[in-house]
Image (cartoon, rainbow, N blue to C red; front, side):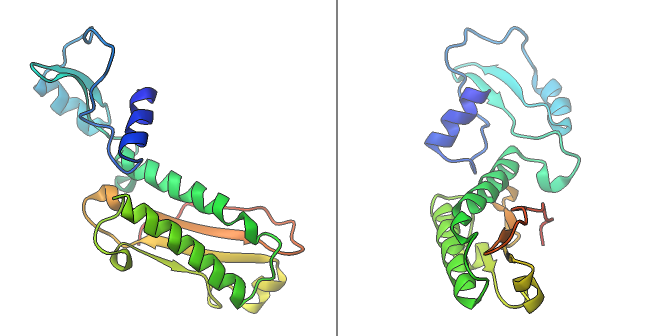
Length: 190
């Protein structure tokens, strides 16, 4: 399965479900799963590998084991992880910068640019303005946060269909003179 996920990531992106993908180099599954068995297994998060006449052996499902409906699908979870880690890595340059409006502008610019590229790759539906927003301003960073040496930003997608188009991230970045850890809380969708 890891190889199928990796191939899917390279060919389509983390936002594409690794379902209906051909399992290469396999003679066939040791157990044939029927449609009625699949109908029972899929809702509980079991993604079966099935053989179909004329189609070969395929991954038939893209669900997680999460009981939280927000994280039910593999591409939603993986897209969120990708966006979260990418923003964390992509804003490390801000660690020793003064926490002011200039920094907030540059953080918004960089995260907007990144999320626009994710959108262009097909991860979010609608227009970029409808698909996501980025906020890093005085409301999230009041004067006492500047002295606490921490800069906060928030980016999130607006709820859209299909559910695999949703992602959200929030960040607190240490700035000049700070020993504060870089943290990414896991917010819920708006």
